[in-house]
Image 1 (tube, rainbow, N blue to C red):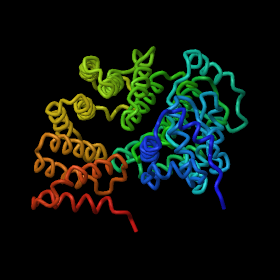
Image 2: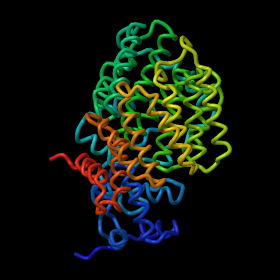
Image 3: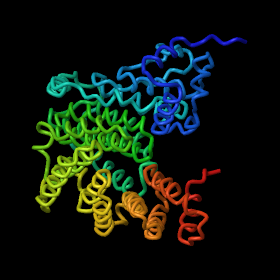
Length: 462
């Protein structure tokens, strides 16, 4: 049967000014960051066939839409590229004006249902979705939440808020020890059931309502963070957006700052440097920074420094890193601060500072900070980050030509990864194998040992 040329797709590609080979290269990048690894083989020939009328299957149409959207800096739909019937309906990105309770119910239901979760995952991480609402939205969202009619559910009191906080602390500790891939769906199930019932309940006063919105926002953020750590970036983005909206409804600027900081961290990780900087700058604007505790200000500031470094703004990046160091020095035992930043200590500051220095090309400085981070971290409590830090340290050592030192560090990283389910940790293992590739046949025992262990970790589970 003869195919009909897809003139709509051809026209949109022409509008980008890209060759078909360039479209394929950018498509592969979007597929990789969206976890669509089955599509990372796409080449120019596939784009050519799609233009000639072949219908891409599975997640490919959505990935193609996001790829072209980024090239044109505007949303491109399936209909725009002649593929409206090529992909099943999928969950749309969460808008800033969406009802939070409805969004929590629908997003959680999709996430827990195996079939719907596949559809949710089929969407691509949206760069357009990183655009933040205007100032008026931030100013009016809390007021609108207060005017929401009382729910028909049971009376929700401060003991219910405390119960959510207790489980938040438990899940947060679990994430730090075991990684985001371990137990995230348990967080989602709790959000979808008990927590959703609390949000639809009645409150004795506005204070309790705001406290509940705030702690639910933080638990929603944690689900997003765990998704980010598991490299489920599309799902993570949805939860981060919902968490930001809950923080705004709670009129909790420091929680909003914390979530924007996480979104910036994810954007840096995925290579969207300008968007990361916009998010990081938003995290330190207005009351989000001034009302934060010293420890929280240090966390916001060091990620702002990382975003500046990734954007190549060296002088400003170094100034931000120095201010973060001063902010952490100002933290004292007993300071009032949210539980979400109890983990941010010297080791965390050193890790983030090292990443910024690495991105600025200061490999010796980065190595020193990574070493400091490893030395000062409580590895048994923060095992996931300890493994990631060792992975990054080994890569910096290898970049400086110290391959055997890198192998020694990577061996420790692989030891630490036992029982960890973290996509970010797994990415460091992929880096190990890539860096060691030129040395595999040189008879270096340390290289052979680390390479074999890394290959075993990356081997698909039968």
